[in-house]
Image (cartoon, rainbow, N blue to C red; front, side, top):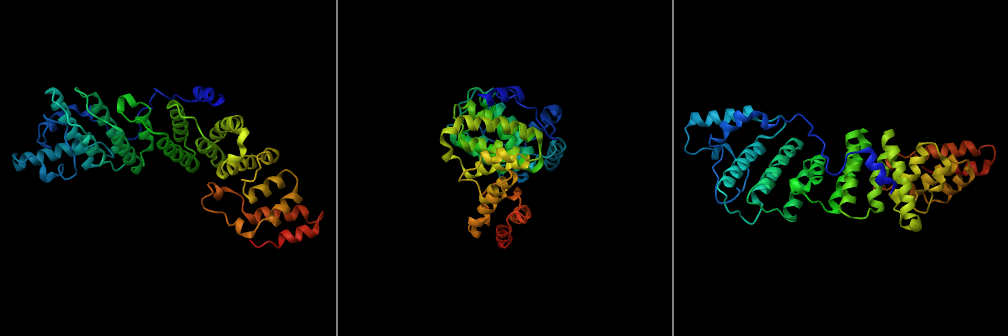
Length: 372
């Protein structure tokens, strides 16, 4: 496929994880502090029989070191704050330290494990932002390295994914999913589509190259799971090029448009309104009226149909579209993605009126009388 070759040439996908970003300080660079923390009674859990169940309550300062002195507790808190990575929430960091310490201890004892991933789920429940998610990645890798092996099933994966998305950590969810053997995050097609939509919206909002790369990595991940892409799979890629100001996004979208035409040309009636609108708008934005008209169909919104016909030099047909369309249809439904970027009905109407003012004054006056 054209897109397959395009992806291979443009981005490092499966098996090549991008480096961690952000300002999170790795605790690996604080070995001394971490070593002292491990022996400071941060959290007493049943370490040897099973991985711990981590909860916010069990990790609160009130539950730390019940046998230690007040001075020891104060020292532990100071060490904790000193080693806290930038951007990571204190509650999550407590959970991370407690879990990794418990995993080290249970592995050293070669202990039998429980039948659930409650320890890692407990930590995931504490994720509150992208920085927490970045540290969760390390915990997930540590969980997977544990000997004997610890359980992780689709229920756990669904929970982890939901928490990462809720924390706006889509990029980290993708990082984990691109290496499922290391992190255990095997995503379903519907979950990958959640990532596609999120990255597409980010590209449209910010023209960010990192989000654009992540968008195509997510698409590559979908192909890697042996799921055939649908029109809904291609829409986020095309929308990112159509509705953003990124030249790179548009260049990639053109490849996607060609592939959509090739793969789905025999069933254009199944093309979704959002996809059809994006295809027409993209060519309108580029000033290619002929190409915009080529993509016209019953699914394309009347406002875009009229604008495409006008741009292609057929103002009379454009006027007919406006005159034959019930006024209620021009109240663009909010479910139509990208409609915020279209030209307004007023501007399309006014340009058609100007075009027909001399050649067809009667039609021009009818169009001018349209209630906006």
